[in-house]
Every structure is written in structure tokens, then in C-alpha cells.
Length: 63
Image 1: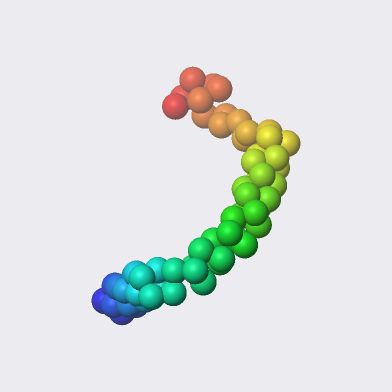
Image 2: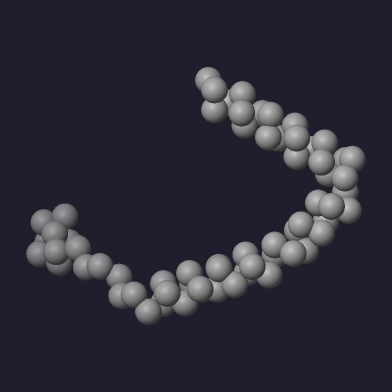
């Protein structure tokens, strides 16, 4: 129940922030977007290097 209340509070604060302090929110998004893109690229690159795990049950015909 507490999680729902906190979540609703954060949603209301976000809506108020976008409405009242639009330029601060826009600056935050503009500043955070390149960092988010770099992290997403790093995760995608690492996902390409790590081979997928093989499931032996399906290879033996038991799955």
C-alpha cells in the first residue's frame, strides 16, 4: 500500500514539475539523454559479446 501512495506522489510531483517548472525539466531531459544513450549502447554492446547460454534439456530432447 505504501508503494502505491509513494508512486502516486511521485507521479503528481512529476506532473506539477512539468507544468510549473517546464524549462528545468527540459534541461534535465536534455542533459540526461546522452548519458542514458551511452549506457544503453554499453548494455547492447555487452549483450553482443556475451554468448547465450545453452539449455541442455532442450538439446537432449527432454524439454
